[in-house]
Image (cartoon, rainbow, N blue to C red; front, top):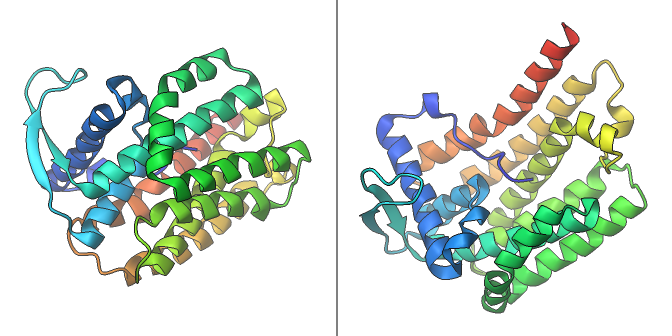
Length: 278
C-alpha cells in the first residue's frame, strides 16, 4: 500500500522539487545510517511526506549536507537531516518489515521472505525505540489477516484499520497536535488502502486475493463510486491538515495532498479505459 503519496512534479517550482528531493534523499540516507544500507529498500513516498509534515510542524534543527549516492554517483545531492526524518527512518524499517512478512504469509512469495530477513534486525531495533508504534503495526497485521480470512466485504473494516495504523504512526509526540495528526493519518490511511484496492482489482480477481471492492467492481458506475469515496476521505484529511500550523514546505505538501495523491487512481482509470477500447 505504499507509493501513493507522490508529488505531481510538473506543478512544482524547481526550488520546491529540489526541497522535496532533499527530504527524499535525506530519508534514504537516514535509513542507511540507522538501519543499514540494505534497508534503503524501505524508502517510500509516504514516509517522505510524513518527515516533511513533522519537520514543518515541530521545526527541529535541520542540517543540509551534500552527498553522493549509489543511484546518483555523479554529483552530490542535497540531503536534509533532523529528528523527524530519523523518526520516519525507523518507521520505514518497522513498517516495511511487517509488510514483507505479510506478503510472504498471503502469497508465499519467497522474495518477500528473503527481503524481510534483511530488514529484521533494523525492525527489531526500531521496535525497541518505538514500542507504541510497533504494537500498532503488529495489531494491524494480525487483525488484517483475520479480516482477509473471513473475507469481510465491509469497505470500512480494513480501510478503518489502515487509517488507525497511520494515525498512530503520525503521532511522534503526545501533545496538542495529536488529535489533528491522528485524524489526518486516519483519512489518509483509508484513502491509500482503498486507492490500492481500486488499482489492484483485476489482479486480485485473477489471483483470488482479498479485496473489499470486489463485489462492487462489476457495476457500471464503479469508478465514479470509488472517486466519490476517495474525495470524501481527502476532504476530511484536508480539514485536519489545514488546522495544523504549517508554514515551511506547505505548498509542496498541498501538491501531494490535493494533486499527486490522485496520480495512481487516474492512471488505473486510463489503463482500464484503454483496455476497454481495444
